[in-house]
Each structure stands twice: as structure tokens, then as C-alpha cells.
Amino acid sequence: MSPTPASSVQEGGSVFASTGPAGHRKRMRQRVLAHGAGGLADYELLEMLLFYGVPRRDTKPLAKSLINQFGSFSAVLDSTAAVLQGAGVPRGAAALCAQLPDVAACLVRDGGRHRAYLGDWDGLLQYCHTVLRAVERPQMRMLLLDSRNTLLVDEPLAGAIPTSRAGEERIRHAVAHVLQRALEVQACAVVSVYLAEPEQDVQTLLQNCAPFVAGLRKSAPLLAVSLHDHLVVGVRAWASARQMATEW
Image (tube, rainbow, N blue to C red; front, side, top):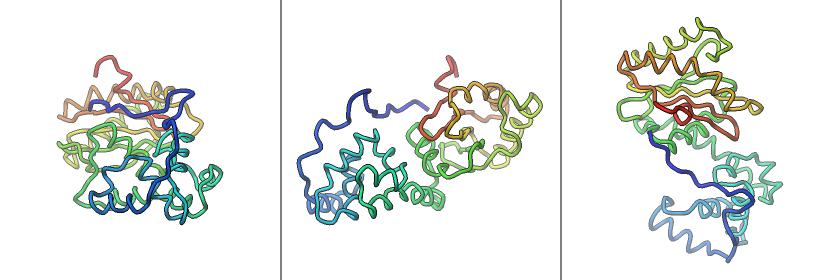
């Protein structure tokens, strides 16, 4: 997988220089009806979500202001209803926005033949921040993929989390378990994901997982399985073993 650059807010700056001028709901609806929502910018999607809680006021300034304040569209949706209300979002719209990540997770889980594609950073991180958002932490997950990098199996890694503190025997057992499951479901690739607690440092955890990652990288090719990456995903930050490695 090659990283896809993500847009971010520069330190001390804002995404939008201006939150005006006023928008027009009728024109926005016509665009969606004619071309779908895929062509809308993030602030326009948020603007339309706010329609349901702001019945007679232009929502574009509020949408742009929220993205400026939180840093991105996804960060807005990842906030609780109470936090959104504190940022000026009406109660109804705040409740709707706060529920969208859970709705998205249900759509991915129930997609049937439309299985999640995890072959790039955008798809992988979106999966971690939607489907795995409500999973109990700390926890290690193994994502087993087919030859097209679509998800076959997502399940927890049983037993102790295989960090350097778990001991060599448990780390070997964890590696063997991942590869055994990969063979059982005929997976071609693996992505392991450590879901960190809010107070845990993702870089430190990534270093602690180094023996487990090294074991997977050594053993997986022997079984014609590729280790795509090992991620540590926190509430607000993430780290990638693949990105940190000088060679992969």
C-alpha cells in the first residue's frame, strides 16, 4: 500500500479563510439529485447534514466553522453530541452527526458481497475509525484480506496482547494463531491493528509491538501470506509499522 496524503490543518491556521457567503439549499439538493453526493466537498456534506437541525438558516458558515474548529470533517463526526452542541450545533443536528459513525459501521458490516476494500490508507483508516470505533480497548485485531485486498475476516486476537511485555512464548503463539487463521480462510494478506486506550501513546505501543511484527514479517512469507502493515490506532492518533520501517 502506498500512503495517500491526507489534508490537514496547518498549525495556527484554518481550513477555510472565510465561512461565507450564504449558500442555497435548493441548489444543493438539485446537485445531489442530479449527480449524487460523491462530488460534494466535505463542508458541503456537513452543510447538508445540518439542514435537519437548522430549518431556516444557511448552514454553510456553521459547517465551515466546525471544520475549522475540529480540523476535518471526520473529526466533526467523531465528536459526541454534547461536544457538537457546545460548538454551536443545534441539538437535533448534533445527535444526527454523532450517530453517523455507528451507522457507517453497520453499513460496512452488513455489506454482504460488497466487502470493505482495505488496500490503501484511506480505506484502512476509515475502517479503523468507523467499524472498529466502538470496539473495546485495548485490543488487538487481525484483518485478513483476499488477493484483491478486500476484507475476509475481522476478529480479535485471542489471549494476551502480544507486546514485548507478553513474553517470547506468547508472541510466538500469537504469530502462529494469526497465520493459522489466514490459512483457514485462504487469506493472502494480513493487517494487524492494536486499538489503544485514549491515554496510551501510539508511538510507544508501536515500539512495544516490534517483536510481534518482526515475527509476522519473518513467518508470513513462508506460507505465501503478506503482512501489509501493523497499525496502532488511538482515539486521535495512529502509527504505522510500515511507515516507520526503513525497509519493508
